[in-house]
Image 1 (cartoon, rainbow, N blue to C red):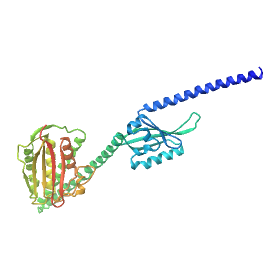
Image 2: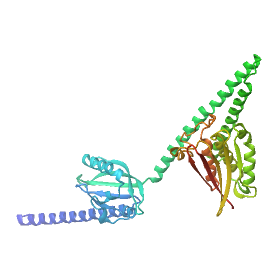
Image 3: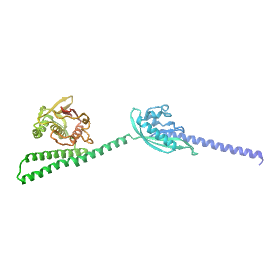
Image 4: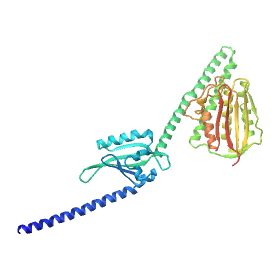
Length: 385
């Protein structure tokens, strides 16, 4: 083969190689287009950035989530949707990982198309060309707001558990110590034929026993409510009659402090609720009013009908509640119990139980109070089914 033939053969070889390269380049471009199409349809928020750290790609789900255009998100535009409190952390995490060519995982709040901030978990990682040339970063994001909400609920449940055990460990133990202590003194006095003051001791024992019974009942009911052990059984009944029965039940407690219970609710006022739950609420509210009302004071019960609800109020002229404490009254994680006017003790669990019973009955509960003047607790219940 002469020089001319070798040259022609070499040209043909180069043409074949060039064709192969062109076909390979076409295949690579097709593969890239396919990958982008897959990313566009992938059910996650996908982004990509270049060597200058600026983002040049957002998939369809990202744009649908944010409600913004590609042009708005391009470059650093996406950062406009990050919550201001999370932005510095978000950018610093990204830049640090980018400079080190390391994968990262971070969580931040991103505004959605409705203007609501949602918690996002962002997985970012470097990506490379076929020849291992670094091209930038690619990331996938997922909305983890429900997970965050569950974490908050779990934290609250743990607080509730801690408070519950605190009540059992401390507040249930305290009245028993009183009962045991005064019982020992009674035995000593009787054995010594010294009967002076034993009536007062017996009164303290009775007061502690009643307090313990109330606490145990509330603990049992609250525990049953949390576990679904208390069934909601609504019925139509006379709230005026129930108020009268509850007032009579607590008349002994009122008599010990010379407190007058004025029941201004006549019989015949019907509501639709769970009778047992409502009775527990009324009993707790009235006994609380008696606890914080000084000797010789007054507790007034009244009710009014508004549209399709009956609003019952329990008013006292007692010590009142500080405004800073009112917002904590219905949370078991807050310890807001204070001694009564005769140093009666409580746990605050009764009000928590009342609030949960009201929620169960499609009702409401709130309080108005002025320190040194008195307090009014309100409950609202449906007047009909």
